[in-house]
Image (cartoon, rainbow, N blue to C red):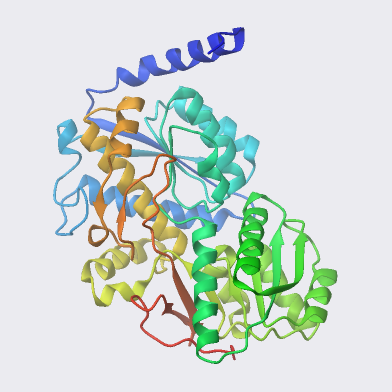
Length: 414
């Protein structure tokens, strides 16, 4: 490698950052940064995330009779019973604010790892900071496929990404077609950040590969004050399936605008995000009976794994809500990094990274319907099996894949 002034400076910066981290190996507490939108239009996401992380922290720091990593010990036995301390920071859904807060967490709060961030656009900048300081970043709930393909060594994601989620949708379409359902045309509707763009790209490729016609591919400005023109295009296209990729405020505006313009899609199969949020269904749930959303989590799993229901009740006691696709992934994000720190027996960034690389958590030792948690060379868990959920009678039920389903899909939606 050619040595330049830039590589020398970067190396010096990383080395300087590592010195205080290594010194933290013998400690009574392990400090982890949690970076979410705690103010602004996505603030409720941050509030729910905080409850999810605090639920996981409680289970790690105290003793519980759960088949979950670290549940049966108080603290981290690999570090002499050290307790997890969380430092929450607010990125306000702004990638540059996320960058600054990540640097502050590392240099001032002395965190040994960061978990975040909800918005994939924020994960881009935060993960770059973590890479520079050689601090592990757990991408708890970001779903953009490009995030783990940037050659980063300290980036890890236990949950599925949007190519995996979209494949589950198209597998579902194929299965319905074999049963005689007419599904030929699709309308894509997606916001213009990395989340929406990557989602649409994955769906366009799958549609081409599987023989579906995309009759509308509409990209809109995130947090747009009006979606009237876009919904008029969707109505004119009249696709068999509308496939939105939108965060909560945009999703609410979309559904309200559809109602105003008299557009009733035959079916909606959503890329989660706003379509997994209670706020959406509180606002416009009466217009969404039968909507389908992809997910990572299924509360139906509690029927087979009682621990899931018990941990959900712990979360619900604090948040007033059941676990959803985001809060469940956030909960598992802290469990995964704490389990790795425990095996590393250190708060040194590289030692934690090595432990993460060696992670092997069986699916039945999680609250998720996954085969297991293992990371490939890019830090992605390829064994995180997605599910599809349908909103029926004011609750979600699992309709796919067959091994996880508890009900048949209602198609078309009511």
